[in-house]
Structures are given as C-alpha cells and as structure tokens.
Length: 60
Image (tube, rainbow, N blue to C red; front, side):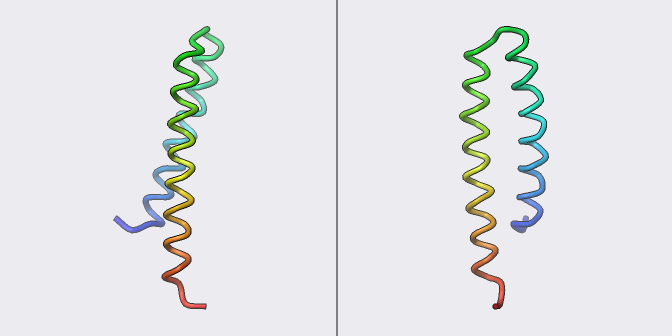
C-alpha cells in the first residue's frame, strides 16, 4: 500500500478514535481515554513519518 492511502486510512481511524475518546470520557473511563490518547499520538507520529517519506520521494 502506498503512503497516501495509508495516511488517508490512518486519518479516518484517528477520527473514529477521537469520537470514541469523547464517548469514553463522558462515560467515566479515564484509563481508556489515556490509552486512546497514546494510540492517537502513535498514529500522529506514523502519519508524520509517512508524509515526510513521501515528500522525500517527490521531485522538487
């Protein structure tokens, strides 16, 4: 799978996780919220990596 598609899928997953994070916070599950925050941080780092890799392969 190429980077643009991976980035798109990761961003879609992150949006779903953000929604779940809000629902879990409202329901009173702070430990699950923290786990989702950590996962969202990992996704953000992966997206940054994929975008920077793609930028390096693009002609200037």
